[in-house]
Image (cartoon, rainbow, N blue to C red; front, side, top):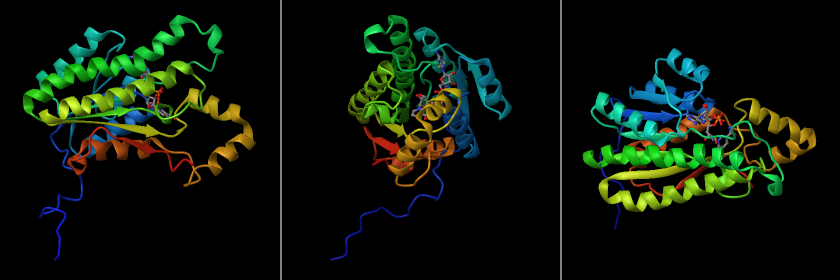
Length: 262
Ligand SMILES: NC(=O)c1ccc[n+]([C@@H]2O[C@H](COP(=O)([O-])OP(=O)(O)OC[C@H]3O[C@@H](n4cnc5c(N)ncnc54)[C@H](O)[C@@H]3O)[C@@H](O)[C@H]2O)c1
């Protein structure tokens, strides 16, 4: 007997994101810009926020509606989401991309200061919680939505950066992803995560890469199936997939976009 495992007709080749409202946090970063641009190219209405003025200018230059928000302020995070929903008559997709290492490098754990710990938990975990909580209210009212959390390989194993709070926060963000997927699935809201491998996006990642030296760099690349580092566009394409109806039955998952790390 022939079994048919798909419903006909198949969806169009491109994910149907035209006209959808999308919020991208940390829009001024390399990933944020690439993600915002990719959604915009699909005809989506893209809204971005960042704390850095230079990043906001870069996003505005490609036509993204963006505002300065310090996501350590949870009320400001909620207000940004509510303002988008009011303007766009709802919010379809949230990409929690803000985060990073805030200029930090590895420090011995015994001498780690509270302020250095707190800021990384705030920007990588608490911000995503505050934005997701606000977004969920609008998505639940519409009966659909998608949240994509930009985690890291550091959500799955020890971080190459050696930064304890970064690793802990990204593990926490993965836990939030899995928990929310179960709570929000019945309301039509999917929640997924991406684990990028190392991508040279700015000073912090370039410094990290340079510090390895040629031998360690070669060893890292030898452990990557595709034998290259990733690009911001690699991350953007995976984000589009998880946000779109192509991933309509995918939730609670973490997708490694790392070229196949051994
Ligand atoms: N580049 C990599 O190799 C890599 C690998 C894995 C995960 N990631 C994650 O991808 C995301 C983007 O990384 P990236 O490398 O493009 O640049 P990045 O790490 O510099 O991006 C962080 C962005 O978040 C913004 N941000 C920080 N604090 C904020 C705050 N309080 N309020 C609002 N915005 C704030 C920054 O201004 C910046 O635009 C981050 O979450 C990062 O942790 C990056």
